[in-house]
Length: 65
Image (tube, rainbow, N blue to C red; front, side, top):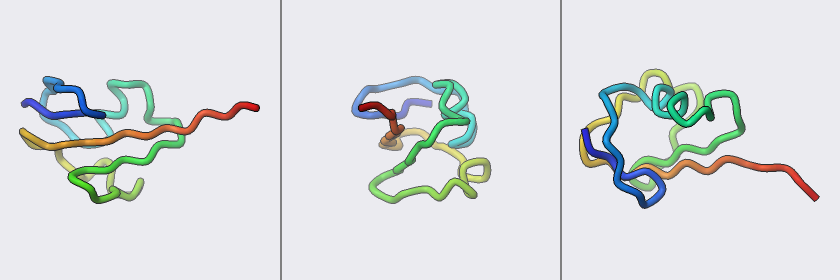
């Protein structure tokens, strides 16, 4: 399927939000997932299936000083 992640087109096999995060190595990080303008709660990552054409924003937090 074709999706847009952080403004960039990406081809991704079918799967869940959790699968997408794993593909970026972000499944254990502090991440906010937004699909079509709505935040997906962490509890719903595994049950939220992705579909063709979705616009997804992934924001992960980086500490520093």
